[in-house]
Length: 365
Image: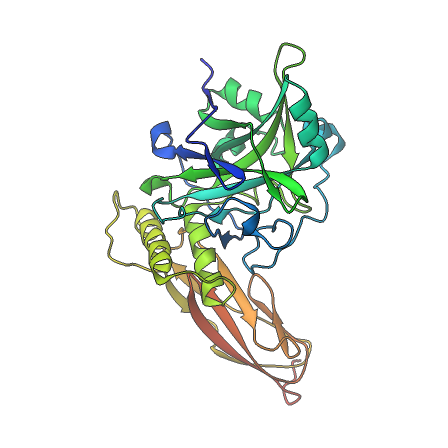
């Protein structure tokens, strides 16, 4: 029996203009499958669903808080192009969502942009509809043996008898008349899924031939469903980083709730069967020197460990003076000018610093 779950009204909310489907993931019985850890970034959501979310067009979910639209859609290999629906783009990343009154527990929100031409096409054709498909990343990987960017996901999941969520939308939010969007929020994620990555994929459903056919949203340039996967632990950690950096501002109550999510993720990563609620945070050790002297145009890699190793949280590196030293996402410092700079590493909102001096007296043979 095919186990694709079509949730047409899954606690559909219409707050402001936009609609968000809320799913109680604990009811789907997916909690015993393997965990996955990938990388990505995210900002916290402010809990509103209308045009007030953004002064500018909708933001690509980068954890520096800077609104950015995807510059272009990802262009997959030719043999996969037929699976892409023109006019649909998933925003990069996801966001933490707590509800307007902080009543929701671990929740990840995904957003899919719908251009006005596609929206009008769907609204004018009773045989067409738009949906968002959500499943764990390991489910996507399990049905995609060749690891291609696009396949016919709905039918692949049905053939594999994988239970996934597909929420059909009949209302959309609008960002300053720029474009429309669908939002989907995966709420009340179970303790044993705190480090598990989920993927959301916009779907165009066409029943014109009597047998449904499906096309899927593109990802922003350089992004795939793999890099776009997000876990509760990751979105909570990235939101705390953004808060510590002053890029996002929210109450201490919300920060405490996010730290609770990190605590839960650590307990789960440590193999515990339930949350201890003891306030655990990651243990970060920088094994490379906390003070580095470098020659001009040289590089130095920051080395360290985060315990437990399999907790799914992001690191954020920032340089206080990029004229002296820049730092990559993986912690590689590049000395580009003489002087001093401080490299700050943020993990779950905690800051760790490395002092860098670029001196003409240092020479590497």
